[in-house]
Length: 246
Image (cartoon, rainbow, N blue to C red; front, side, top):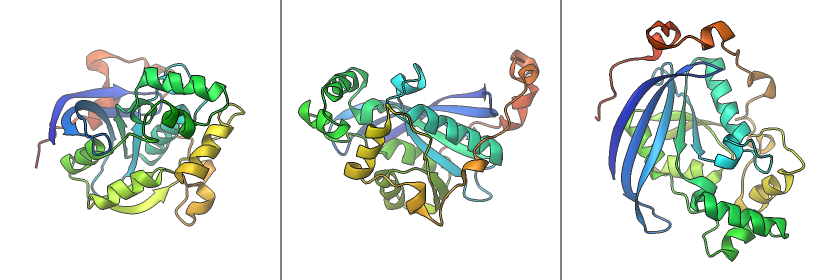
């Protein structure tokens, strides 16, 4: 795989000021066999090396994260990871370009149309001729290696992510559940992930679980969040030298 870092910027959010690294990678998807250029982002906060950091590997979801769709839990899981990282003062969110479990936005909407007719998320993908899940996690794992991270606390309910990280030689010191409150619109989708894709829950993850009262990090004040340009002192502590390939 050819992984290239293409940007490194200060990135203030409502929870904390992250360091945002952008990557491009040319690789062959192990599930589809297709060679593709994939873009991925790394939101870095604090010290990632003194102890196993919180890490969330998160797939792009335009419908959930941009339009706040209630059909899935993606938006809330992303915000959960950012909040917990801010609360702990350190963490890493790896945001990968694999919309709709790897089939892309348009095909995901076609799958939604089939779900409106009674199919579940797995059946819809198969009806359209796609794998149940086209994602591989080679790029985010390569970024972990690039950043020199050898042990993590992985926030995920997805056993495929757990296996991919472990098979790469990176130790999972702890699995933290990514359960978020559901809605009437997402309940069937979440249940299907658990039943057909083997997704885990906090209750099955004991003792590796995160209690719900610890997920709400303190938000940046409006005065600090609105500072821009050279006066953005709140980000200064998270800006270091560019990462170098080892």
